[in-house]
Image (tube, rainbow, N blue to C red; front, side):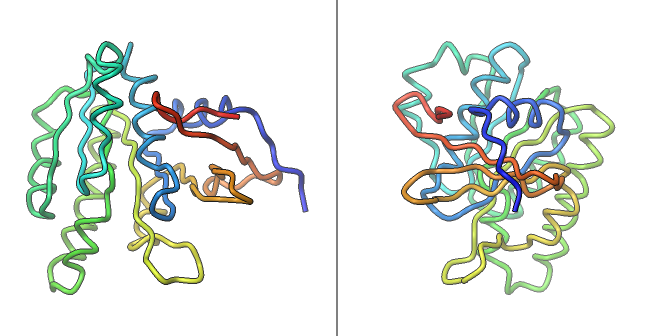
Length: 205
């Protein structure tokens, strides 16, 4: 077993900066939203404009409000239906955002997975984002929910998510510590960073 690389978040920030589509998945409460907010703050402060879409009412507006100057280049939106999310994605072709953040990208799909057209809509939305990322050069950051009650930590629609996202991280707990582990691309030596959450967001330790 290789020794995990622990670099206080520097390597993760570097990978995210170089990635066209970057995904964080994990259990509820692991810190996915805080990581996305922190990355949005750091990346969009100078490289805006950015669009942050919340689909599950987990956005911490109090943290955004306390650092309003750091999110001046970010537009926040809430979407609660899969069709509305897809409609908003389609409108991106007429917008000029540098970074799109979706928290979480599979929650609305999970809610209607039983519907016949839901898988097609979810697949189309991921493919469209990938195409737009290539054509317009914007970055996509997203989180993904994990199925409740599963022994293995896996997000709903994970096979599709892994196909379309070029960088994938797992977020979770290890001995009461929060961690971020690189899942894709794979390295011989695992990349694992630990972090804490405070009033400003995720802080690497």
